[in-house]
Length: 174
Image (cartoon, rainbow, N blue to C red):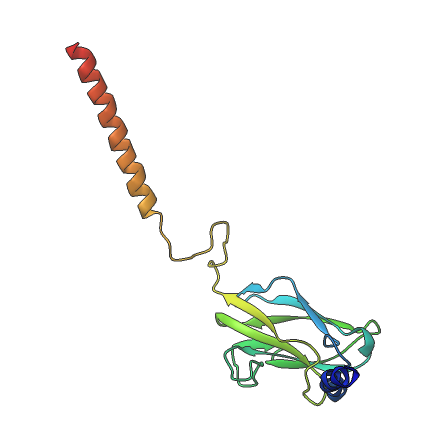
């Protein structure tokens, strides 16, 4: 039994040694003011890498749908500090904050990379919607209309009016 446990645990230990960050979660996380954003309006993000203070990182963003699921360098609809990726130096707390702007609707993949292009975070997804489609004072546009409700309400009004007229006619005949 000890041999089988060693055989099962050995691949995990080797995989953890390969990425240099140990088992479990990647060393960096990203937070956003919202993961649904409006096209052409900047939104804030913060990267936190507790054990990497002073390290230079790259935040890369691109449209999703790539075979590898990562952000790509050819996306022209994205701006992080004027480009589709930007380098930052983490402060003494291991954090950095900035803004991102996207100029087209869609789903975007965002990831933190080290100087060699190796991932330091999971891939995060942001959904960009056109201005006015995100509920500016109303409901989110879903393609549904209120026409069926208006038809039902009109039908009930006609039915109620007919019932009142029928009742009055019966009362007068009695």
